[in-house]
Every structure is written in C-alpha cells, then in structure tokens.
Length: 157
Image 1 (cartoon, rainbow, N blue to C red):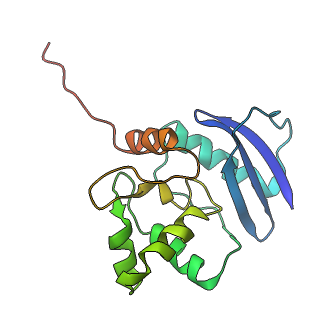
Image 2 (image 1 turned 180 degrees about the horizontal axis):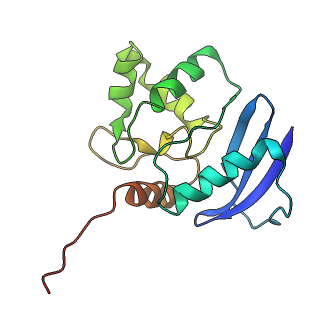
C-alpha cells in the first residue's frame, strides 16, 4: 500500500492506495510532514483533490477501492449519487437503499466511509437540515458544504 500526505485547506490529508485504486483518504487531526514524493499510483488522486479544493473539480474520476462490508459499500454507492452542491438526509438515504428502518445502520456506514470528500458523506444532513455527525468534525462539514455551494452575491455598484 502506498501513502502520501498532502496539505489541504482543512488540514493534512493522508491518501492510501495501490494499482487497484485508492482505498483510503482521511484528514489528520494533527500536523504531519507533507510528502515530497508522490507515488505514481496516487498522483491522479492528489491532482484531483487539489483541483477540488481549488474550485476546479466537482467530480472525481480516479479508481477507488474502499474496504467495507457489502452493506457499507451499498451505502457508499448511494452517497456517490448525491450531486455536488446538493444534500440528502439520512432518512432519504435509507429510503434509497430500500429500507427506511435502516437509518441508524446507514448513519453508521456513512461514518465509516474511508474516502473523505470523494465519497461525499459530508452531503448527508439531518431531516431538519441540521449538520449532524461528521467524523472529520462539524466545522469541516460546514466548510465543505459552503465550498460546494457558495452564496453568490451580486454587487450593486
């Protein structure tokens, strides 16, 4: 497994993967040393994540290979369908996977998402519109949602 650490506006981010795809992307809660060399298998992911933070990308196209249970992977597949700049509630997500009673299991799978930003678990909110639970911290979730849906204010002058 290859690893690289990059700096993003939300902190140092670790990316892991190999020739089979990217298996893990997560933000670190402390500073780390930025990688000076990027393994070939991770270059496209690094570039696309940097493009995302620079406002030049709304979708990711590199190969992913997350480890998880079949149920978790089913939830993550649904997360991938939430469009950039949009949100979905945990209840809506439960309905989309076909079991409205699985809301807690869906929330748990959402929280175990190993591909930060790429599988957009930050786009899932409470039914009342509240920013509920986020492994990276609610301040990061708020930042990401604002980044994806900035308020455009026109100047009068």
